[in-house]
Image (cartoon, rainbow, N blue to C red; front, side):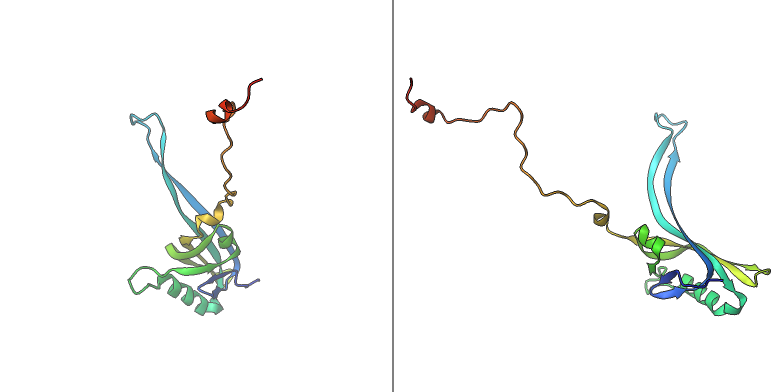
Length: 164
């Protein structure tokens, strides 16, 4: 089985067999049926991006399981959950740079495989700047003149021209 570290948190590789990293993002809506509004749903905005990580940790690699639970429960000096720099191809593709553990971390024994099926959900804390998502603006050009607009001519110049 492959045990390549496909994910790193603060530079520390997370080694699990058959690791699967999949992104998700929730779009929140509120049901408006029965209200005086003409819409059935009201948009509540886009919620944070999240990665779903799952893989196997063999019973022989108990230290890996212990370390995952230590990382999940680590806190900052302020008492908030620790933010981790995330290194993973999928995370890079969706501009997820920093995340904290959210929801829960599970380690379900798989007796037939002599391993734990581990799953956890790092949730975005800092996405790449939106400036990187936008196409570059073209250099600003002067506004074209309106069609049918006549050029201004100074009257003294017209009067000084000889008549035929």
